[in-house]
Length: 491
Image (cartoon, rainbow, N blue to C red; front, top):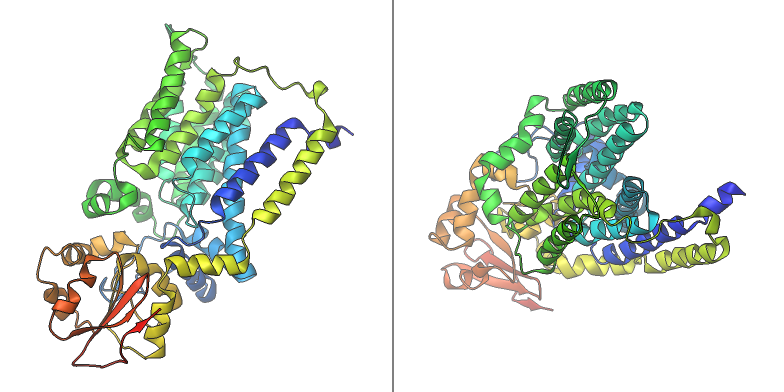
């Protein structure tokens, strides 16, 4: 009976509502341009039983060495596809996104000791999470950040043995996404704060007892050791540092690395949360711990500098906000719970989740709405031969759907910057040099470009280039002296 009451409790009902909200959010986000090359990498690992050490999909990267820092996540994406096609990938996506929000709710609940206010913390994670909800390995990283925070909280407030879950987290993290470096920084922030004992107005720090700190240090040492259990050794550990310090073109040209626009909804939301915390502190209704201050400052700095880091800010800020507001709303009292209304609500939520899950037809329509499906069908039906110049955003889909055509470029910006090609392509795409230079250097025979590309207006003006296919998403141009395909096909 007690288990039944817990299963149909008010917090579980709130968690089911969070899952419904997450499902409604992700159901229309199936087709991310980078999902496809991650899927292809997963297929390659699955079928070859090995992890590729160099690029195999492009003809411009010159077999550039890879850092396979996402191979576990890529393998899981392909396994989901193998089990259920597009629907399997969607289940993978929905489960990870829902787990992130629900686990964030649990973290905020334990941290604030108020299940009702914790729902607000979970909503903060959901709100900022919408910037990064995609079928990409980064979903693993968000979930692992929450898992790390949860283990640290349990270790310092309950039993120090919880800390020893951290090496497992980092073992998965190093092989799933390069953001493991952020996890190390978060752990170091807690370690630093654990040495101080003071009260400076609303800013407070409590020194950990020596035994608990010793357990935490040992768990961190084991976590660092776990980082070396990866296919590329130290290169894989150094990869995120190299990205931040040396990949200037990636930072400057990829939209998700752009600075936050403070007038946008999420920019306003970020400062609203900081203002709310400050307001509570000014009213002296709560205290701010040193580790919370460090994480809030770091999360704000990351989010303001790069919009893709907004979700990190949400994850780091949500527990603190929940604790600050814990006394605003009365806490959940299990003895006053009403099982039947909760059970009805949870049942309705399950029905809503099933109804919101997109059909295979809907998923295929999403792919066709974002990827050059029909343009590729034209290329294949008329046996156009390469080399091919493709739009940057279409490279991932072409790697998956047309492996017979090596791509010129795709979303793996790191290997193209390492090989030196990214700068060449950027100059071509932004008309900083004669377009013929790149076309002639690589002996390009046909181009598959997005309708948003500036080059679709330039290629018809160049000698020997002809538009042979056009639809709402893509254009196909061929070099006329080498091949004369049928006339323009319009859809």
